[in-house]
Image 1: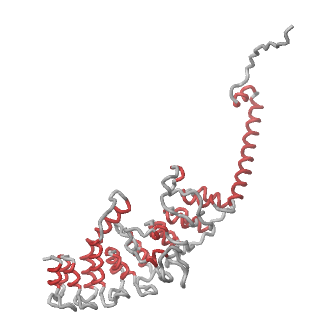
Image 2: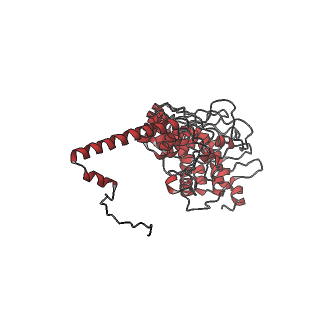
Image 3: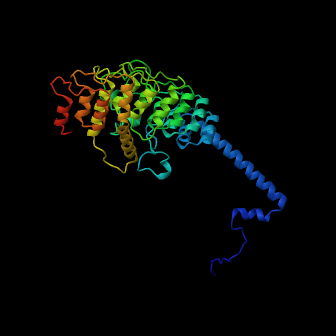
Length: 401
């Protein structure tokens, strides 16, 4: 006798999907089950949500990420759950600015390591988040370790001084440096200091920076406008927005004696310099390290230096393309700037330590339009420099005749 069993296949009409179970229930019972499921789901989600935010209160990642994404609703929700707004972007957190990251992680292109949520919003131009963060207690003047954009020392920078480049910076600087003008205005309206570096006195700078002392003091927003060559008039418009209502002293000097106008002329920001003159900047000043030169000397020699720089290494780079356009616009503004300086009282025949006049400087790099402009305004072509050279002699040396 065999002990084997024989199995009979029994077909049971089970629902194929979980949701089909409800179809076998009477309507009143079906509604009750659905309501219970929804309520359980909501309660579970509330508990889970609360638990996640309580854990996040230790590191603030939800606030940082909402600021990076520009998500005001998510930011407010995180703040309501008590997530702090003053934590810094983790040094070892996943870096969305890395090209190797997945697309979903690349919410932005700028480096924000070590930044607070407000600083992140300033870099990315999320103007609508500024008020939310300030109301939640974010420090409008929080100093970051540095501005990563300035620290990179790009060849598109108009200011290359190591001290302001490696200085610790405020959210206002970050907004200006990234050309987020509306964000910069919002930061000022919420009480930001217009001095964009750290507090007065010596301070630590980046350990890898080749710096021999403290950063420049009293570096204001007006000087920050000279940092990058950019097309258009936004920098000048922002300067006027600050100066016209008296928010800032247009002639305030740094602890090293530089005015915003002198900074603009030294940096080749001739459009901005022209606007500052229109707003009342004093022109009979100079650069402390070049005390015998007028601002006309400074501007002309800066223009010569700009003309000697290489034009482009990658014209497909958007940042470099903006730099080139801004640089060309600065060149175009030079004659008007020189004329305005003369009209404001800068002596056209003033000589520097080598006895050179502005006409000597213009003849050196062969700018015919500037030479003619200076001659029309009374420049003396017979004056000799310390070596006995007249402007014409310098033009011949450079084959500009």
